[in-house]
Length: 343
Ligand code: NAP
Ligand code: G4F
Image 1 (cartoon, rainbow, N blue to C red):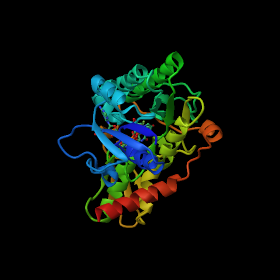
Image 2 (cartoon, helix red, strand yellow; image 1 turned 180 degrees about the vertical axis):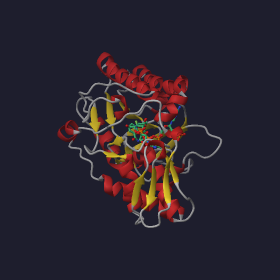
Image 3 (tube, helix red, strand yellow; image 1 turned 90 degrees about the horizontal axis):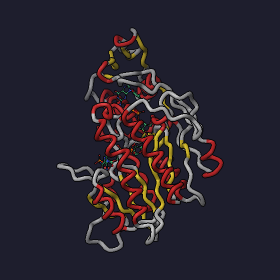
Image 4 (cartoon, rainbow, N blue to C red; image 1 turned 135 degrees about the vertical axis):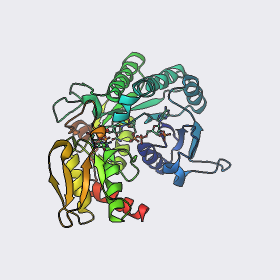
């Protein structure tokens, strides 16, 4: 039986990856952070009693900013594969907490790689690093493994460090260390402060009479939105190759935030029409004339990544990976799930 260790198991991707690996008969170890309130809701349905024998999911306390904790966990568990999905993953928040973001997102993966290096004589552990399309910044689309990295945020900059240190350890110490350069991926489990989930939850609440309107920032940014379920399969495939390498996972299609809003409202039979410009722009229900979307300048970022669209041809050719769930299905699934949960 293979053992996997997931940093970030309580996050969106961690929860999908844990389920995926458990189905493939892995023993999954996950790192959760100490919190004053419960933070395991995404994995509660696969949680197992600590007194049960032959558990498939085993949770440990840990933190990417704690070197000794990471060293101890890795040398005790000695997993076959480590997936580092842990991060301060919010781009706008990274402008407010740049130092913490660097500690967690840049030095965190370095700490894991050092721990892997230290146990090399006992076990060759494979390592997956959650790299991101945010590293490309405003490099022209479509972005591929060969595109220039030019991050526009403290988050993106920290992730560029993590990307390079992963490659350095692969080259210098022959560690099986890989980067998955993933474009935006969403799901019903997406964190509530990311734009997709913020929109689908607001749409559901408006439909149920629990909210009147939503505030958004830049409506014109374009993102390549896929489904997290497809992307965790890609992560797994990256670590099953003969040679360690880096891969872009994306859908190759890109839509504006504005279109996401329109399509989410379509799911509840509301057609949005836009009026006004810039900070005074509003989104109106065509039928009732109610204002459902307003702009709040505080939701803009100091720097914006305008256009992300990935070229995933390398993953298609080598990993035989293609995304199965398209953008339209994704939006519908997210709205339907929020309607069900909130009603
Ligand atoms: P997420 O939902 O925000 O999950 C992040 C996970 O990291 C959570 O489990 C979180 O724990 C954990 N974490 C945060 N700070 C930590 C720390 N100091 N020590 C240990 N764990 C910590 O993110 P996601 O969407 O699943 O993304 C997974 C990874 O892929 C992240 O590294 C992200 O940067 C990267 N990525 C995401 C996307 C995307 O579109 N989703 C695209 C490209 C790359 P808590 O639950 O306690 O907060
Ligand atoms: O949903 P977002 O916050 O995602 P963003 O910034 O693209 O980052 C996500 O994808 C990255 C991959 O490219 C990951 F690495 C990262 O961890 C994260 O998962 O924002 C998407 C777009 C941005 O252009 C933002 O300016 O939506 C725009 N936006 C407009 N109004 C908003 C809002 N974003 C948020 N979060 N909230 C708003 O009200």
